[in-house]
Length: 139
Image (cartoon, rainbow, N blue to C red):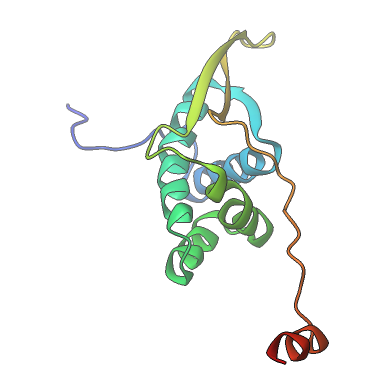
């Protein structure tokens, strides 16, 4: 038998479990900027996250809603679209995978996935315009 034109890894899980696993890993990567997981999972997450970051860089409402739907976590999606994506100056290759040795229990190969660019999670506060300041500016 052949395995032509089958994309993605199955991880020995059913579809809903695999989707939950990948969403959780992607949300953790967004929140913590770097995670250590098995090398196979890191490679699979990179495929999906690269596409999500490209969507988030566009930043319009449609792509924001697509990112929210893919992640299923509003906090992580907002962080990606509003904070992380504007700081990325690349067109592709946003993530890096480094090998991190072998896991002690089952000798599985581990990898650390992180963003290539240095990204700060602090949001620059914009001074909000109040009614009084807009009236003063109009005069």
